[in-house]
Image (cartoon, helix red, strand yellow):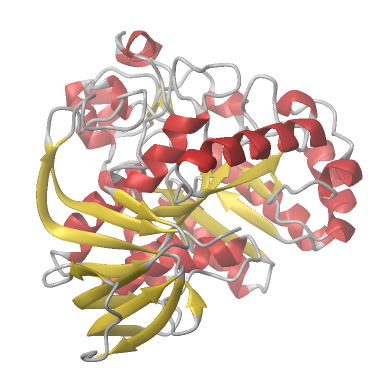
Length: 432
């Protein structure tokens, strides 16, 4: 997989161009010069002599993907993932913008940490300029521990994409105060609703399959009780909130009701919760140990329908790298989380688009257009005279997932040593 960054001229011939912003799906020639889309036409005859010719037949050209939130190993856990490997994984998966949660060590809870990460990304991009842009989330609380709020105004003045702890805040009064103080700052806020008291020691969503497989159950109410309380706070305070990691059917229902009430909320689920349910835990694969846990089949069905209907605005990758040692333990003892930046687009396309359940534009919107809008950003689009922020995808390439074929330093994925249909061939990232 290669990348292109503001250099030279490329003609992508007879490629299927998908763009959720303009709602277009067409076969065309696309001319790109010095990082700008110059022309899109059914057939181009006037071609610069210096243009690199790229075959597009059977391939798809799409706007770059936007990941709302994932987790970096650097700083603090470089054996799991460095910033360099994270960005390379994002590029390999078609992402041009990556949101990073503040769950690093130390946490991203002050402007110096934000600057350090962005400077580091800049240094890495000197070697490979087509790597995704990095968008750090600033922590809401000191060390992202949910105890004492950070200097919100000071952090809001740094180039963070918004505020999120990446962990569930347990104190309702602190939550309400945060929403009040954040309102005038005008930054996106992402919150995960999970009542840890109700969750207790649960490792699988409570239901028939947690019982059959002998796994301690985590009731759906651990999500929905906390979510209902948060929505009441939003109704009272009025601060817009992004609801992270929705994983239950009742959660989808609560989000839909909140939107019908006119509350300023958006919501996301993770790609893994669309692809698996608690029924799949029969293998006890520790790579299916997630937080929140995989839902029951009814939850999975509600999430899939919620994305299709737009109740769930976005799909997040929530890429969470862990070492072999972290995961080579019994299911209940495994650290929760899985990698996904390199796999998500291809697997979701093969599962939902290739089989006809979703239109390509539905998947495109939930992994590019809507995540960007949740950040308050202009979404990537493929239009003449616009910067080239896009990726070339071949849905017909079959490849095997292994530590050698992954760019991530970690390989904690249920697709390890399995074949995946579809691969990103190239990305274009605009100049900063």
